[in-house]
Amino acid sequence: MDVIPSFSQPEVVVENIEGMRRWLLKGVTVALIADAHLKAPLSRLFVFTHSDGKEASFAALIFTKLPSVGSLLQSLSEPGQLVFQPPLAGLASEFVAVSEDRALYILDTTGRRGTVVTPGLLPTQISVIIGDWPLYQWITPAVPITDPFRFTERLQQFCTVLSATLRDAYVERDTPPPVQRITLHIPHTEPQGMAREISQQLESAFHRFVPRSSPIAQEVPTDMPSDRFSDVGGQKAAVEGLGMVLLALSNPERYQQWGVRAPKGVLLYGPPGTGKTLLARCLAGEARAHFFHVRVSDITSKWYGEAESRMRAVFQQARAASPSIVFFDELDALAPSRDGAHEASQRILSTLLDQLDGLEELRGVIVVGATNRIGAIDPALLRPGRFDRLIEVGLPNREDRQAIIEIHCRRAEDRAGRALFADFDWERLLRVTDTFSGAELAEVVRRTLESRVVSPAEGPITMEELLTSARAVRSENKQRAQND
Ligand code: ATP
Image 1 (tube, rainbow, N blue to C red):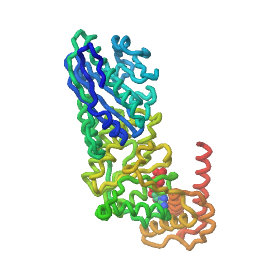
Image 2 (image 1 turned 30 degrees about the vertical axis):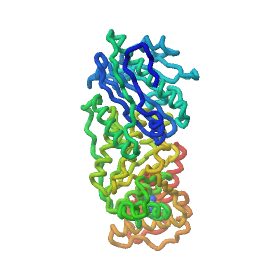
Image 3 (image 1 turned 90 degrees about the vertical axis):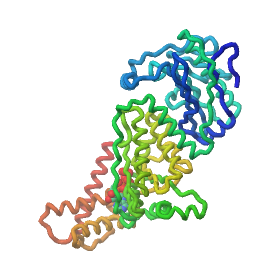
């Protein structure tokens, strides 16, 4: 790699550009590829890379001194109070560059703002970024790394700018730059091991400057459901699809015998109230597995890095309790598409991807996601080896509606220990409940039973009573739709 001659300076080199390109093409969430102690007055350099299999970006964080917990907390809670340093003066004269918003954009050979040198999140930090780094979405769009020439050129530019930034940071502080070789290297060549190594590296890197006073991750509540697939009305295709997944939990050897990868992630998608949660609970019930119900509020946190810790903690809990099902409700809200997503969501998504990629050896843990908005989920989650089994859970048809009502009536009778319902003429009820979800049908039965609690009537519940509840649910739905 080219280094600027005539200066003694820290030299940033890439061990194997072609290897790194191939490695990044596999899709890497965030990997630490260099971590160097620097001579005072600088203290530490972290270089990260990131790719989604098509685009790659690199970011270096240079610390002039390692941030204290206090300064980190202050900068996170009061971003307006940051003391931004101006970009390093020497760089502007050395490169074709544009200075704007206290950042220095260095133009690439095509005249685009290829690299940016900016003050970092902390007053003690300088960032050097090339490409569409998650923290800095507004930087020039990354170039697909399927173009090897462009990739090599950009990586070399990044290294050159990084070397020059380190040198200038010393020079500005009146210290001769040390001659130091910093190698960017591929952490691992095999994808599964790579994912594990990345999360370990990142964890240890971030531990050095993430406040330890953040709240301890809460345990996600868990239970061992008694639900069975026979509790689900209709949804035959979904139950069948989950049957394959059940086999992976109850008899993983079958998959091994045939040399095929067992499923580890399933995405249930469909309108609200169609039984996605119920189906996931049934899967756990049938497999006699622990069920971890993870809601968005269980994961998100105002503390930097806390959401990622919580996500890792969920998987740790699930591994310890295997066989287990980790159920992510509203996956679209937890892991929205990266385009335009908030930086915190992107970090959660990266952690989730790391955890999914590390599940290979975790026999006995299946991850189930549920969403009403499949299009809003980041596509990286749907790649092979992640949530790669997509199961549609749609609104019930006529026959399924009858099955669902029957299930709920039967359950009430089991609980009451006696017959409660008269024989039905289903035709009218199924007509009124057209387009009802399973949850709404369950609600029709519940309301009807509840109205009997306060009524003096004693005989069997009639179809008329169910029809009255169904009409009430229907008109409330209409009202809600109008209000929306
Ligand atoms: P959301 O997308 O709003 O989270 P969901 O698809 O996860 O909804 P559930 O929470 O599983 O839906 O459904 C709510 C309740 O509705 C269930 O606990 C169950 O009582 C009833 N229900 C829904 N679908 C069915 C079904 N197919 N068979 C029996 N009961 C059902």
